[in-house]
Image (tube, rainbow over all chains, first blue to last red; front, side, top):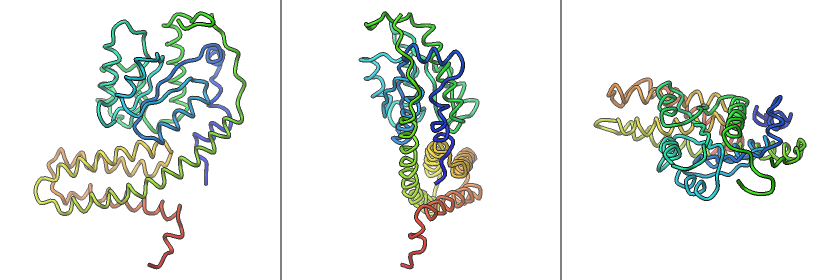
Length: 164
Length: 132
């Protein structure tokens, strides 16, 4: 069976090595990511790929589960599907933005909806970025690195040995 | 500032990922077969519907969109493209209040189901050669 671009990327190590200065940033500070997608296979692939790229990854199969996880553990980047049974990614995004006294969460919508109208609706709901499913994996990883950079520039550095 | 030591490249992790990828892809192919059956069921529903087929068009669109997302993630480009065509045809038909003979929808539906069937035969050649 032919191995596709995702696997090739993993095999040659590109997925695990962010470019340039980002490499040092990635190495110096872990970044917590919550992946939300109702498709088990897609979710498993995203989690594995992001772990290869040195993200600390948790996952949820629904927006509701994601909210529960976020109440007990802070995440710095939320990578969420749009269309899911129940609440859906757009509503999740709005709820995350409406949470008071919370640290900023960088939100990336990851969806098949690629119309201009959808993109604007996603951004209007509070998403910081928008990546179409099926876009080259390098694009997703580049956007994740932007998220990591912004999350770390917004958040104060953690003290060694304890949670800030 | 809490600095963790730089993690070295992890060849074992990459190998595991490549292995996992093949397994996920195998599972996805198996899912495509059940999705194909579902599309056949929806095509029967579309053929039977006597009044407004808007609900069937909506089902087709949603289902095609789901397939498109997963196929795109697994880089099965032809399935993703065929699903996209069906998604757009169904949406257009619904917006235009088309009847259940809409040629664009049927053409896209037949193309997608045929493609999924061909993929299944590639994955399971024994099934295609069976003479029952």
